[in-house]
Length: 315
Image (cartoon, one colour):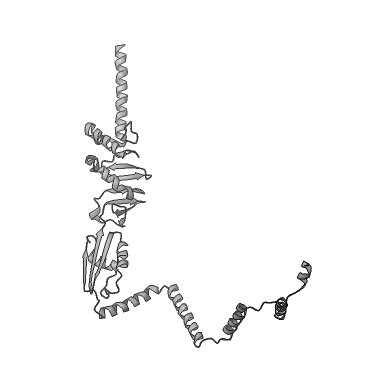
C-alpha cells in the first residue's frame, strides 16, 4: 500500500515539476526576479554628465598633492596659507597687540618669541596654543611652558627654565647640563666654568644625587676638581692636589666619612700621595707618589742597615 501511494503524484506536484522543467531546472522565485531586474537597470543606466571631468580633476588634484609632498613644498604651502589666514584675521581685529612674557632668564625675549613662532604677522585667532607650547618645550632650556590667549589681541606666555647645574665631559667633549641631565649647551661659556665637572657615561643622570651627597662633606667637596663615574657603577674623585679617591659602589657616604676623619686626624690628603682606595670597607689603601715611595724605600734600607750595625756591635 505504501508503494502505491508513493507512485501517485498529486496535481500540485506535477505542476511544480512542470514549472521547474520550463525554467531550465531553476526555481523562479521572487528574490531571483528582483535581482535580475536590478542588475539590468544598473547596466542600462547612463553615467551622469560630468563624471569624466570630475574624475580627471580628482586625478590632477592627487597628482599635485603627491608632487607637493614628494618635492618638499608642503611646509611652504602651509606657511603661505597661514599667512593668508593671519592677514584676514588681522584685518578683522584679531591681531596680536600685546605679548606678556614671564620666566625667561637665560633666553632672551626675542629667542622665546622666535621659538613660539610669534611674528609681526601672527594673529590671535589662528594661533594654536597647544602647538606653541610644544614648540617651546622643544628647547632644552625650557622645562615647562604655558600659553594663554586673551581675545581680541593679548597673548600671555610663561616659561620655567632649567638652571645650569654642572659640566659634563664625555668622549672629550664638555657640555653644560641641568640637574636632570638635559644638555643645555654644546659649548660652555666662561661664566659657567666654575660649575662641578662630571665625567663619564651616565654621569649626567647620576650626578645630581652624588653631588648632593658630596656637599655634606665640604672639606672634601671644596677640593674636588672632577667626579668620574666608572662603568656607571661607582665614583672616583680627582682632587685639585692631584690625589685620586676611589669610592666604593656601595655605601659611598661611609667612605667619605672615613676619608674626612682620616684627613682631620692624620692630614692624609696633605701628604705626598697619589691615590686613596676606599673600595674595601675594612681597609684603606694609600699609594705614595714616586718620590715619596723612593724616599720611603731609602728610609727602610737605612733603618735595616742601622739595625744590622746595632746587632754587630752587641756581638
